[in-house]
Amino acid sequence: MESVNEGVAENIFEKQFAKQTVFSNKDIISPHHVPAKLPFREKQIESITHNLSGVINNSKPNNFFIYGKTGTGKTSTVKHVLDQLNEFITKRQLSVYSCYVNCRSHPSKYKVLLKALRAFNPEKDFLGYSSSFVYEKLLSFAGDNNAHAIIVLDEIDKVKDVDELMYSLSRGNDELNQGSITIIGISNNLTFKEKLDPRTKSSLCEREMVFDPYNATELREILMERTELAFKEGVVKDTAISLAAAIAAQESGDARTAVMLLQRAGEIADIEEKYIVDDSLVEQAKVSVEEEIILSMISTLPQQQQLVLYAIAQLSLQNPTFTKINGEEEKGVMFSGEIFEAYLRLAKEFDARTITSRWYRQYINELEMYGLILVTNSGKGIKGQTRLIKLGFDPMKIKSALEKELFKSF
Image 1 (cartoon, helix red, strand yellow):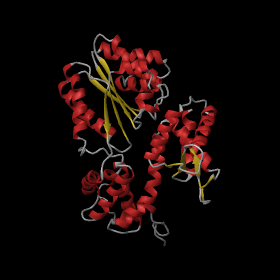
Image 2: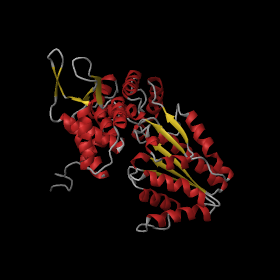
Image 3: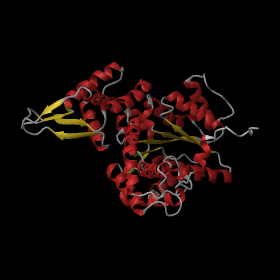
Image 4: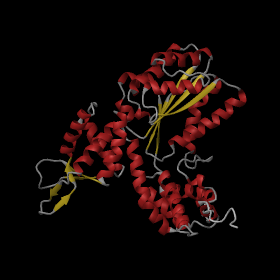
């Protein structure tokens, strides 16, 4: 007689479960993990802590803005300080409240205010009420409870009506006899503040802080600490850690890139059933991580800069060719002026405001700094002075990634 288990296929996950792995705790080598210790950000932690310390004495802290490229520890540092603050105020039962808002998910004044109000009043649902009603309720929460509300706005440049939001929140304190609202803005865009309305800038009274990219030595130490907790002992070679740190430092100074390189190298080791993570696996990981990082970076760019890059990608797909003075041809090269004209047409299609030529040049410089485009001066043999621009990555992938962002935003 056939047994009950005969002919029953083994569960497909049993084989995976039985496999050896190089990881001991894979979550720690994830770019989303916020470590308890943040090396090389001690000065920034001290500065943010000092700025917020007014709330423990029942006074309003200054608003302040944090700038820096992706992966420089801005968000992790702010969250670390707020965790410490929440621990302190809970022990002493102080009326201090904080709320973290990802502005990429909440890209309007109304959505930001609603998110904050829900965080401070979790037992009530204010969905469907007008923006002015939600704003008044937020002020009432601070004033009626003599509460200090700290609102962290990550990727603040993603808010469409950011001037209105900043002006309302900063001037709201003028209506409060007690309590306060403090803004902590975080942006990857170093020139974000310059685009604000003068009224908004004058009402903010903010402090500013720039997070510089990590260098190779700093990235190596960060990876060493993560590796000790994330991988089994002895499976990751020191040279692999150094290589991942060097690649990330050379390309961006981005800690997330460095972490992702080691994470992906470990995943490749598991798939290929290798039990040592060496330089060759980091090199393999670099190919897929580089593309992922670039596509992720695109989503963090300001909308106007996305339009500029979209214009470059569209023109690149038309296979432009530049003829050098010696007769040689180089494919994919475009003139700066024709890109600007294409950008103006796109802005009109998306019904978006247009930037000036000065801001356009600034955006081109930043896109070059991020490694998304290659820029050279025209030199001799071309009438006038212009810049030659070439996209650094597959234009179809760049265009596709930008369309997801732009069609969502406009």
